[in-house]
Image (cartoon, rainbow, N blue to C red; front, side, top):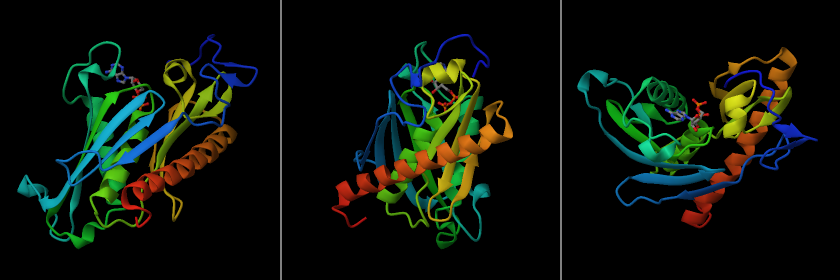
Length: 240
Ligand code: ADP
């Protein structure tokens, strides 16, 4: 998010990738793609490609992290070295630590953690191609993987960003818009209650723009939610 720019990102109401301001990039979600995880998902969102794998509930290690009355969700977000233009240094950095933490917090709001005292549910999110919006893509994929693993949950969490480019509030920023836009607002919600479980804001929005951006991101989340449910229906023949 570089802030103000002279770069023309919207011409006559059309974005560089041909979308209208309120349009999502193409999304494809497939549940149950990994043999070695208890639950999994592959998600393509525009040019983003993300795998999520879920393990557990299992005994929580290290033991000092155990909670006597509930499970904890240990989510881990990583970007592959080949996921971005310049080879990314493998492993954990400040950004992936932050995203892992906020994702864990969000999942603990929907997973019925009270059913599994002292346990851990591990959620691994691996970005293999990144073109902006990967935290939302990873959280969305991991929600489907949690459901695919049969982990008891109150609901799934779709996540979608909105933002501002060339003074226009838009849905689902692409890479150029993320780099040269004015604001980026990732949101994750619990659709059945409308609760917000993740909200971040990079850049500046007026109160009116903020409201508009929240409305757009919420409608993006609801569109995704349907696609997530369809992915589970496709795997389980409508019984999910
Ligand atoms: P998000 O992917 O959730 O939008 P950011 O706003 O932090 O998260 O990042 C935006 C985009 O910047 C990423 O999707 C990715 O394309 C790119 N990016 C992030 N980290 C790196 C990195 N270490 N090297 C190169 N590009 C990166």
